[in-house]
Amino acid sequence: RPIRVRKLLSVYRTYPALFQDPRDGACFQWINRNDAVRNTISYIRKDPKTYTSALLVVCNFSPMQYNGYTFGAPKEGWYKRIFSTYDTLPGAVSDIPPLTTQPSECDGLPNMLTYDLRPFESVIFTLPSE
Image (cartoon, rainbow, N blue to C red; front, top):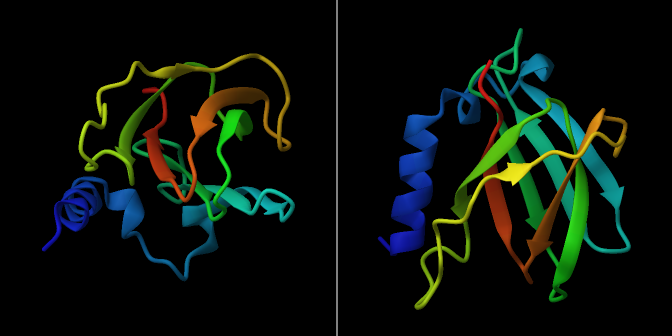
């Protein structure tokens, strides 16, 4: 299997939020599904009752790079990137510092994160610990 697929499967096996019952709407929360202009989506996969072990996913389906792309975050704190579709490319830097929330409402959530979203990139972040 390609290295990117192996890395994604490793993330999938490590974080139960990704394979919780997909029919249970409490395991999924949209952040932004209406950004058709930039062709991006963002959402959270989580335990049905809490944000413990939750993951925040941002996907860019366009050939454009969005420097300073902002999206909502449910909890204040540090969000660690655990996967990017760019991590396995030659010369890629996969160990970036965690993103820190800004206390500003965004996408209907109380906090905001900013990230340089690359063309056709999908990225997964862990939420801050309880």
